[in-house]
Image (cartoon, rainbow over all chains, first blue to last red; front, side, top):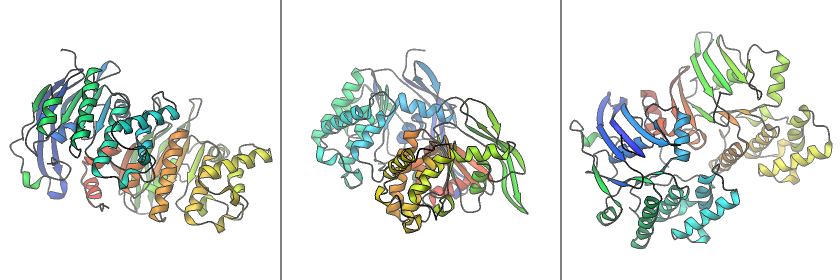
Length: 245
Length: 258
């Protein structure tokens, strides 16, 4: 077994919709994916193929039915399929960062605090964390006058950049990126591409979903095809299982 | 969140006449962790909270509490004075109705200071200073320290109850619908307060709520109850984003998106 940061073996995920008479939607079947340190793998495949489902499974957000998700955590592989909840939280804290497409805003919490709180319990003092969060937001072109404001009222692109700041600030060894540049303009896309290049250079393993061909070609070391499982009835896919187009 | 659970419940059963309130419920709570217990009215979640906190005795099963020193005690077998001492200091209880947790004929400062005095604090100046500090933490104007709680709004009463509960730095807090019955704007402020205080103090919390959004915001883990049983449990985001049990799927799909 060569050295990996992240590896799936025969990963399978089927959604069972009990509210629809137990309808079963197989989304992932026998997925074998290996990502090395410093490598960026972009998931490719049509909408609805299961790319977001795979990414969420890698974060332990969707629970796999069978197979293994091995994550190198504190130097040792840990299987997220069988790990207990507290172990998964520890993996997320130290090892895996996830940038979702949409920011989940918390009432009353400022953009700066949303980013700074990722550093809680990692060493930096609250003042250092706030300073680093401020720099991160500035590098993503979120002006300082917005730092103290809860991002509920921000534009889609601004919210995505707050999300990116959260995802990149802690220097996780594994990053999962779901459409990191989807709502960004050319200038900010460029910033994000550079952040991804820097992360790779420090040895981070990255799995991304990226529909924009220019960005994809620049960040991807290779593409990993995610193919729709045949029995899937696309018109009845549930909100959670459905790929965001 | 490492090591041994601070609270461990095994095989809890309890019936009220023909009504089965708890049916073989087991749960663990670890130090510094928030466990959200969700379910509809009558699912047994408040009963579970009362049994875990020693207020209600189960028909069967055990609840053990692990002390700071590592000693474990059977919550329902310990002598009453020992249980009361724990409830006054190491544990806290935040009721949905703050009037149940507060003494309404004692000033705001007295309500906060009283729990300190029950722990043995005697220096009036120190107690008052601590009370002022806690009123500030829960965003109540310290100028109101000598006012009676009945002059406070519902949101202020709930914040005062939280100050009274947390002033003794408990290791374990039971919360029953702490934001129930409050305006949405007041609720947001309270949630933010609970979230930051709990994280800073490293308290273990069992939080009963019927509000999925509250559970998602505050809970590390979630337990979904129905008809006295825990039907599904796991990381909060796993259970809410990828619900497996038919009842959880119904619960999650019934939430209105704002």
